[in-house]
Image 1 (cartoon, rainbow, N blue to C red):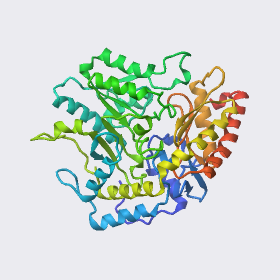
Image 2 (tube, one colour):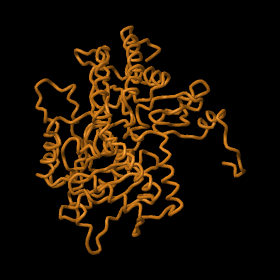
Image 3 (cartoon, rainbow, N blue to C red):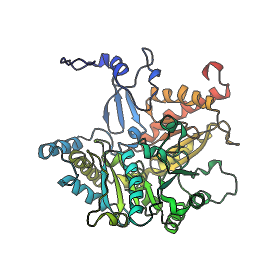
Image 4 (cartoon, one colour):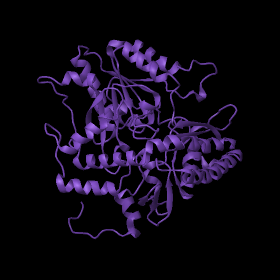
Length: 468
């Protein structure tokens, strides 16, 4: 039982002990930390960099999980939050409204494609996806199609951790502990063509979505939920024409197209929304993370006027919500964040510098374990392979040793935070803050090259039994 006595704030010296004793970190192997292997404690941020408790600097090559797009240390965002607290600290948007939520909803609607004008605020990305699933079902209930309850997503895709969003997620290892999940989820192939057989139709993956819909019965399918550029599996872009084909399929079968842009919105691909990058207009957009550059937690589900219309009359209501959706402080931060984007033209900066960033990563292809480099904007992955010619991958044990046993720790030790991941094929993902430039690209290359080269040497020397 926790003591009620007043305690002094812990000093830096005992944060490690307190973290191991009390802090349950997310998606973390807690048993990995002990008196020898310390918890990485990030204490400060500035620009494209963060600093640990000892003052060591790291290039934040992941934007703190694709979030801090405007960069760290933007004090004006904190000042916007403070001003809002002085005016109105909190009020719900259940049957009430407040100025910042109204202003932010209008601002977002002015940036969305097509007629996506209805903004439903959440606290984060999983809640936004959960809301989209519920809205799709409720919409079809009100338009005379009550059997349309199923939702289709892609293999290896990640859409969140709430029970509906987890069913949408196509990563088995994240699901098994929590089954049975929400019924109605189904999966289609993703667009990772690196391992496709030669000669396959470029739009094969899009057509597979229609095959799944037809197999299940179009009268039972409510929505297709896709990221513009798929995160899990390693920054998987669509083929040219993919989303145009999917849009046609959804229209043909009266299925809502949900663009999950929790990562891809707010400049990550050089546009306000990833759907702009690839030229399609969805029925619903889900977003979060960089809406505030993560200075405050906030997400949103943005629906088209057509999807909103059945809820707009009489006694109808979308009976769903979250206490902190549209929080005044978060909304004020989001508005200030969008001011930064426009004033500094961060979207334009990404478009101007994306080729340089990609060229730097492509330059690593001379390292034998670098198989594929893929992505767009400031969102790329390097897929690692055992053999470049055959594209042969590693066994699960080899991948465990390569990614977690060596790469993750060594990259961090040398001052680069990125993601070494094997949800799908083994990859190293990079998504630096949108303020990054040639200096940061050079720094990434100066760390990645020797570490990947050393990893290659270790592989060529053979994995030792004790490493597996």
